[in-house]
Length: 280
Image (cartoon, rainbow, N blue to C red; front, side):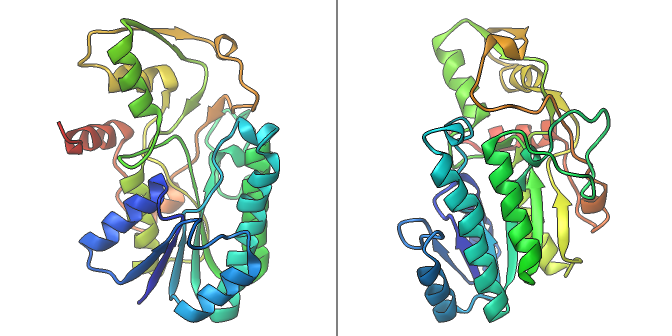
């Protein structure tokens, strides 16, 4: 089978390339400068030429705060229109599409876990555009998997883990939000699950995938910096006003994903493995 990775230079795109290399899988990887998902003609021409069996869509506009104002148009172009172009092209040539979405399609007000079947209610522009992306995939008729994830960290991009480490090198005291609850996700776990769906020929549809367990950003930071000489203090979200709404309780059920036979490490296990894998 031939794979196409879209969004190749992003955090997940690079993780996917590393994984497919390790698995000796044939793939082509394009970033935005090589394949602009917002250019419908280019998307159709490129996919018709390559004819991938599987499209791994890691292309996304992820500047959540900027999406509220100066990046609003680009957010919708990439996350909604770009996704529609890929989904329609995948339908035309018969490719399987794996589209990565977000926990931000929910409002974060549910006491329990969010299931794939729960009604969505995105509260910021990023979440609205990603939900629109989900809808165009579902309506396209493509053979498709939609994987909702959250709090992503990995080796190949800027993320919360690296931000905390950098701040700890500069400061002896940090304040971190303690009233937002969610599930961190290692890009390696996410990439492996995307490939697992393909290999296992799982039913098409929506899946939630993060590492198991729950944490606040404060608890996540404490674990990241547990071996560092730095004081970490919990604060409320009011201490860090942001343009974009953040869900207060963003915990998605993993039961459906686990039912496919995929082993999901805890976020602490994933974080430990990730940090051990980093160069000294």
